[in-house]
Amino acid sequence: MNQSDRDRFRKAAEALGHHQGNLLFQNEFLFDGVDFEGAAVLDIGAGDGASSFYAACAGARSVVSLEPEVAGSSSGMTTSFKGARDEIGADNVELLAETLQGFDPDRRTFNVFISIASINHLDEDACVRLQEDEDARRTYLETFGKLAEMANPGAALVVADCARRNAFGDLGIRNPIVPTIEWQKHQQPGFWAGLLEQAGFREPRIRWSTLNTLRRPGRALLGNRVAAYLLTSGFCLTMERG
Image 1: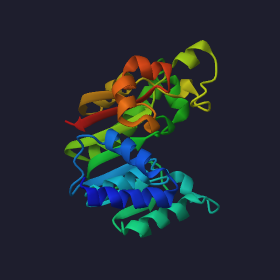
Image 2: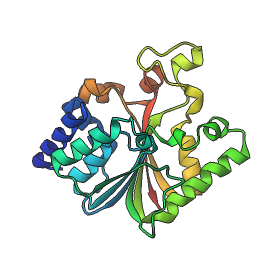
Image 3: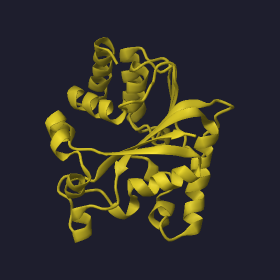
């Protein structure tokens, strides 16, 4: 992404109400090594569209943003999404109020899949039981299989979330940095990688994230598994379609 593209993304970040520098830093970390140029992108649980707009600014040909929460007429998410899209002229970003399970690709295939803080929400009840319940694993494998069917050869998959294990959670106390996280509703990145490999994805790359306000010094000092366990347990898992 060149400087002009970064400036364009900063405008989208401002329109969404984010800190421009922090959001740019976060997305450049998450999508390190991902080629968006001319890509068809599917953003699963897109939220306010921040990652979708980053993909568009980085050269994506088309972006489908799935966010079921925008279905509510009282949601301001649709308004902010459309405002950011208009601000940067990203007409190639499409917002759909749908889940991944309910999404009909209509024979479309994709080069990049994005799941930021959404993989555990695909089926929260099943996610909690994944480690000991075969039916729960089957549910997720079917969903991951749908991704594999929509993937072009070599398609990239980027998953970012909190891991299940955290020092505060293991001690049974509230994490002061992310107090609302319910750790039992998450899984370790290696566990996700194992399930995704069964669905046809390969070459897992796991990186541990830090607070974006700390930028590069924080990444250098705290971007490791031990520090993540003591802080927010944030990770980024990147894989590709075999």
